[in-house]
Amino acid sequence: VSDGKGKIFNNLEDKNEIVVINTGTKKVTDRYDLTPCGGPSALAMDIADNRVFTACRKNKGVSVLNAASGKIIVTLPIGSGVDAARFDPATKLLFTSNGDGTVTIIHEDAPDKYRKVQTLQTQKGARTMALDPVTHEIYLSVAKRVPGAGRRTVPGTFDVLVYGMK
Image 1 (cartoon, rainbow, N blue to C red):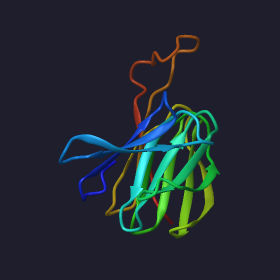
Image 2: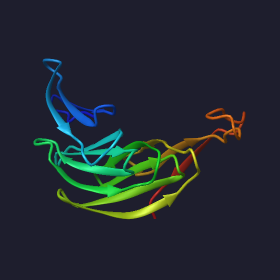
Image 3: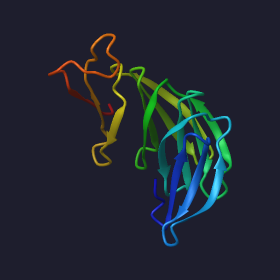
Image 4: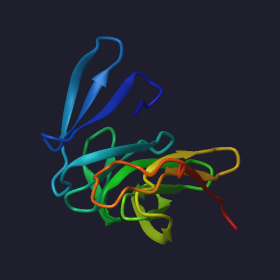
């Protein structure tokens, strides 16, 4: 994710860390250890409050980091098989889409205070996600899988799931 000010934050899943890249020099300027997070696979950012959210598969958690210091503020539980994370700055909601058929929704009460507000049931395998910042809807793509065939999908079963706020 980019902070819009010349820094890119990138998960290194095999090293369990985030690297900070200066877009001007194209060099790594910082490395942030993500313990207790394990297997970081999704990133989002609250640019206004300078917070990075990294969602991890091994500990089924999302860690909130101070982007300036790399300090982990809190780690909250999420579903298993996380693939994507999105932050909506208008609603202060963080969404993680999980392969177990859930979306974990966390509210940012303050830059250092977070709470899980909902586990949204979706469809198993629906983990690729987009967020529309205007409508505040999330979109998940999914297809039925052929039993016992790994990631092979059943032809003609692709669907887009749309969820909005009440």
